[in-house]
Image 1: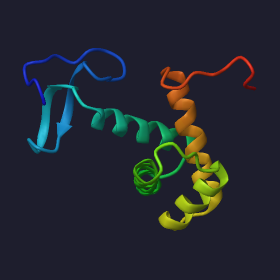
Image 2 (image 1 turned 45 degrees about the horizontal axis):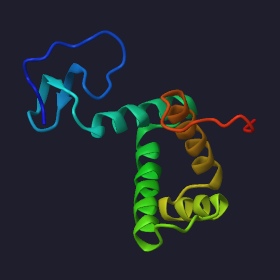
Image 3 (image 1 turned 60 degrees about the vertical axis):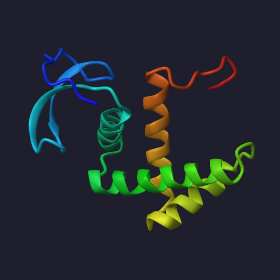
Image 4 (image 1 turned 135 degrees about the vertical axis):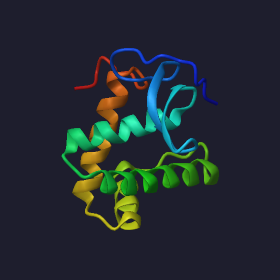
Length: 126
């Protein structure tokens, strides 16, 4: 999973970049090559914290519920599409937070994904 002989590049780390990172497995900072999305998810959560000015524990809790909800929905009905408002309500209830908190996190997540090209803005989108 990790290449420990790598050198860190300048800028923000992405999958494939060698970085100096705190490794949970090693228990210390090590030079590793990012080969999995876990660091990408860590970076996403950090960016959401910056965009929403929410603390990391709040973002992690809401995003964990969001991931569970998305995984459950795709397993239960892979072709069905849930109403966004209903999805936000269910996530807010499960995470024990207000609708506004979930909505702000969803907006920040979508903006992050749009900037990186994971989702494409269509010509008709505002």
